[in-house]
Length: 121
Image: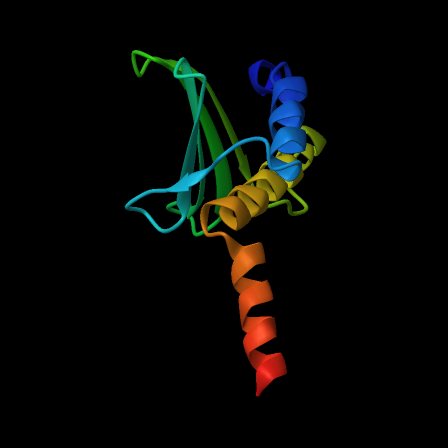
């Protein structure tokens, strides 16, 4: 886990820029995976899944422009057996996942639109 913790500041920046809507996330053929590209040089993929032991997880993969894997940050849902490092990483990755999903699916606009439709009824 030590290797993953060195990437926490980078993940925090990505989360901050995603919250500020400065990072454009897109959906993929997998409904629980979202991707973004930064300046054509790097890409991130955030996914939500379940391990073979049925433990929910979040995974963030960073790749370079040649599809080389720079790093993978992986954490399972916190429970009594998980480490504080896992729990902190999961919280950050889960928030990034939720924000990326909002951007990719344009949820804010859709909620506003349906609210307007309901107001007119």
